Image (cartoon, rainbow, N blue to C red; front, side):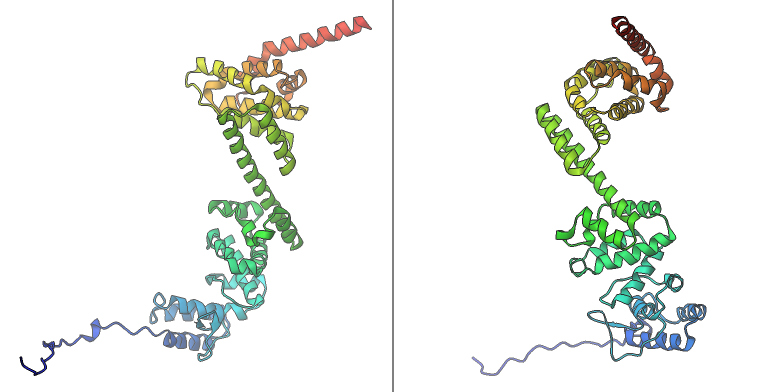
Length: 397
C-alpha cells in the first residue's frame, strides 16, 4: 500500500469575462442620500423648487430602488439607522416633514409625502398624524393604514391614542363625520377603534371621555353608536339561536330584559330586534297561499314574547311599522298583513289605539295603498266597536 498522499482534485476550465453592461450596479443608499440631500440643501425650502429638483433627479436616480431611503430623507431629514434614529455619519437636510411648522397649511403642502410611524418625538408624531389625516381626507390613503396603530407596544405606551387624536382632528377639519365613518366602514375599521387603548381601558365609557375631552365628541358618539350596533347584532343572533333551540319563552323574555338593562336599549329598539329574530327563525313557504297560514301559526307561538315588549304605545307603533315593511319587502307576505295585525290585536300585543293611529297617520309609504285597503273593514269595525262602547258608557251614566 502506497504511503504517498493522494492529490486533491482541482477544478479546471476556462474563466469567462463578464461584460460590463451585464454587471449589476452596486446598491449604495449612502451615495443616493448624498445626492438627494445636497440637492435639497441647495434648493432651499421653496416647495415648488424642491418638486422641480425631485422631478429632474428622478431621471438620473433610481427612486424605485431607493424608495425607502427617499422616504427617510423627506420625512426625517436623512437615512434612518436601525431603531428609527438618524444616522450620525451622514449629512441631513432641513427640508423634511419633522422640521416643518406644526400647522395645517404646512401639512397640506407636505401631503405629497407618504406616512409611516417610527419612534420619533411627540412633535414629529403630531406632524405625521396631521399629514395622515389630510391624506385620508383626500383619498390618497386607505383607512386600513390605521391598523398600524394597534401595535401592542404603541397602544400600551399611549402613543396610538395620542396619534389618533391629531389624525382625526386633521381628518375632520377636511371632511364631516359621515365621510370619515364611510371610509372606516369600507375597510372594517369602524368596529376596531377601541383597540387604540389597552385591554383594561377598552370600554365605550373610557373611549368617549378620552376623545370628548380632546374635542372629538362626534367621534365619541360614532364609536358609541358602533358599539351599540354591535351589541344589537350579537343580541339578535342569540335570540335566533334560542328560538332555534326551542328555549322556553319565559327564559327568552328574561334574557331580553337583562340585555335591555345592560346595554341601555329602548323598548322600541328591542321590539324591532325581536320581530326580526322571530321572522328569521323559520324557513318560510314559497307559496303565497300557504305562507299566511304558516305565519299565523308561528306568530301565535311567539305572541307572548312580543306582548312582553310592547308596553308602550310607541313600541306598538314601531312593531306595526316593522310588520308593514316586512310584508312589503317580502312579496309572499303582501296578503298576510291584515291577518297578522288581527292576530296580534286578539293576543293583546297591539291595541285599538295603536292600530287606528297607524291607519290614520303613522303608516309609511311602503305598500301603503294595499295595506290600508286590507285594513279598511277591520278599522271600521274597531271604530264602530268604540262608538258602541262609548254609547253604553253614556247610558250607564
